[in-house]
Image (tube, rainbow, N blue to C red; front, side, top):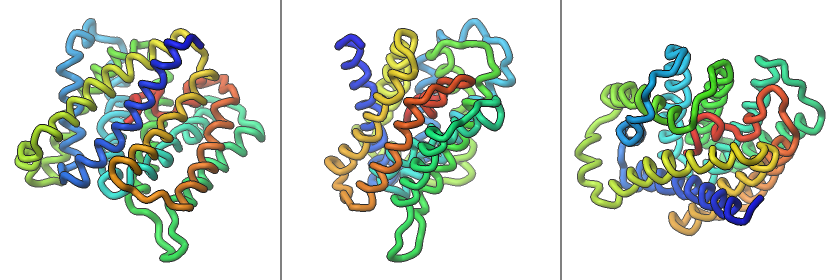
Length: 300
C-alpha cells in the first residue's frame, strides 16, 4: 500500500474512533437525546448528499429496508448504547459486526467456515463477554447489550444489501440518510422529551459534534474508505481497520477519563485477536464481511 493511502486509512480510522467518543460525550455528558441526535445526523447527511439521490436506483423497496436496518435501527441502538456504556468498551464491542457478518454469510449465503475463522468468532465473542460481564456483581453492562444488538442489525442489513445491484458509497449514504431521518425523528418524538431545547442549549460544541459526524464521518470517512476499497483487496484493508477500536479506546481514556481496567485490556486483546483472525481469512461469498458494519453504513 502506498504511504499516502496508508495515511488516508489512518485518518479514516482516527475519525471513526474519535466519533465514538464525541457521540458518547454528546448523548451522555451533554444529555442530548440519542435518537434525536442520530436523526439530526441522517438529516444532515441527506441534505449534504442530495445530488447523489439521482437518478433513482433500482429496487427501491430493498434499499428502503436496508436503509432502515443499517441506518435508523442500527444507529438508534448504537447511540442509546453509547449513552449507557463507556466509549472504549463500545469501540471493542462494536467489532462484533465482523464475526456476526461472517456467521450470517454462512447461514444465508452458503459460506463455509473452517476451524481458523470458527476460532476467531469464538475469541471475538469471549473477549466481549470479558468486557461486558462484571464478575464482582454478576451483572452485564446494560449499554453493551444495545451495541451487540446494533451490530446484529447492521450485519443483517449488510446481508440483504448483498442481493442489491452495486451502488456507489455516496449514493448509498444519501439514500440511507433520506430514508432514516424521518423514522428516527418519529421514534424520538414517541420515546424522548426536551430534544430541541437540549440540543440548542448544548452550544456550539454540540453543534460541532453534529457537523463532525455528518461531514467528517459520513461524507469524508465513508467516501475515502470506499476509494481505498476500490484500489486494495479487503484482505489487506480489513486488518488495518482494527485501528478504529484502538483509537476509540485511546480517545475514550484521554478525552473522557474512562478507566483503563484489566478487564478492558484482556477483553480487547482476546476479542480483537479473534476479529483479526477472521479478517485475515478470505470470505468467498461476502468478502466485505471482514469489514463488519463498515461494509454497509460506515463506522459510527
